[in-house]
Amino acid sequence: MSDAVPTPVSAPATGAVAPQITDAEREELRRHGVLITYFEELYNWGRSNSIWPLQFGLACCAIEMIAAATARFDIARFGAEIFRPSPRQADLMIVSGTVTKKMAPQVVRLWNQMPEPKYCIAMGACAISGGPFKQGYNVLKGVDRFIPVDIYIPGCPPRPEALLNGLIELQKKIRGEHLTGPDGARFTRPEIPSEFPIPECGEHDLVPPKNNALWTPPPSAPRKA
Amino acid sequence: MESLEQIRDRLRAYFPAAQVLIVTNPGVAAEHSLLVDAAHGRDIALFLRDDSALALDYCSNATGVDWPDKEITDSVKTAVPDPAGGAPKIIEQKTTRLQPGCLEAVYHLYSMKLRHGPVILRLRTANRSDQTTLPSLTPIWRSCDFQEREIYDLYGIIFEGHPDLRRLLMWEGFKDHPMRKDYVDPDDYEWEPTAHAQVLERAKAHFPAAPKPEVPKP
Image (cartoon, rainbow over all chains, first blue to last red; front, side, top):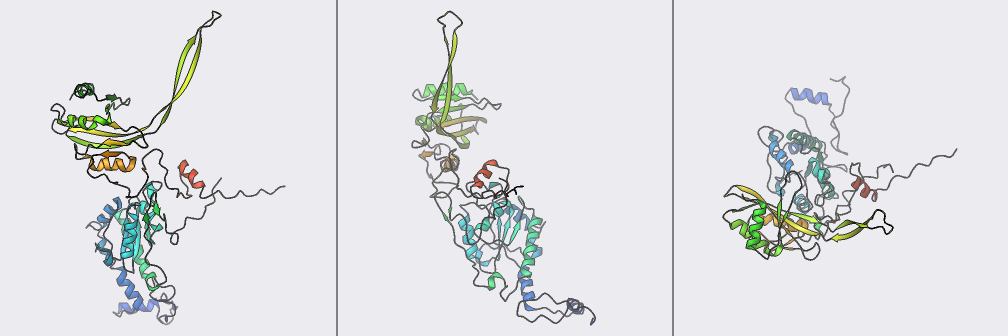
């Protein structure tokens, strides 16, 4: 073991002392029944395996989300089966479906009421960009105009497997988060906002139509004249 | 069930003051409909529901139609005799007239009791701007409630006698009626590759084309 090239375990946080043990050594110890870990990894492991989603659905994607919770697909395998009816108890907002302009203030309000750490999955084409209703009069052109989105799941609607894949991606993201330091997770840094202004329903459109601090239109692609 | 002409004739006999017309549908479906003036709309609807031969007790659908002002060109051909004795000249005169637009509510009526239908009933407003009132048929068919609210929301027809006339899909305080032909949607277009020419055209204002690369002169 001593002649193995030491590969450091992924650094937990800037400033923390990197463990003086290689992955291979850790694996060897684990086989002998000794588990060596560090607090951040353990904490994130626990968090990522008990994500409680907020129980709300907006359109047909919600049916797929419900299907993902049934016995056939069984979202409980990933520890996310406890759909909470209150935003105060939820970690994850699955925006499953079309966000109408009439509904958008309520979605932002629910997001504001969720405690950190919180995550958002935009499920389906409508939640991502407005989907087939993008140029309609009453559909928000993507929920990321008002709340930050962590995982985008394309599809119309995405199958339950796609939602589970999105959940696994979110778990990976949570496991990679740091609890301290300048590159720490969002909830460890008070300077990053966790609540966002709620748009008003105006005379013709939402006021403002988007949160400019959060979302800007894509840079002008070189368009052929 | 009686034919639509028979229903029309009976209605004319019962309501001599009412205007009852048949609007024909030239399509394959040939779903002709009854056009009734707004003043007698409520009475006629009540008659259609309570008449023992019709018993149209179920309104399955109520929807709106927007008819914008339309310019119609009529051409009249007149033969002018030639004073020299030749063949008469045919002069075509074209006149344009403005057919005023209106808003329309369409009701599809069935009879659950006698198992027939549909009878399609249309009501039209006087114009599209200030006289947009129609009698509500919700007191006659309870199922019209939400559908008339939707028509009010999206077309702006005001249903008199509706028990709870509020917007259904859009929020309170919204000013427009989005399903009208002259509705202008919020100008928040973005550039993105799309097959819709209209969207592309409006997106151009927000994302002007990249400047053309200068061709070096030889």
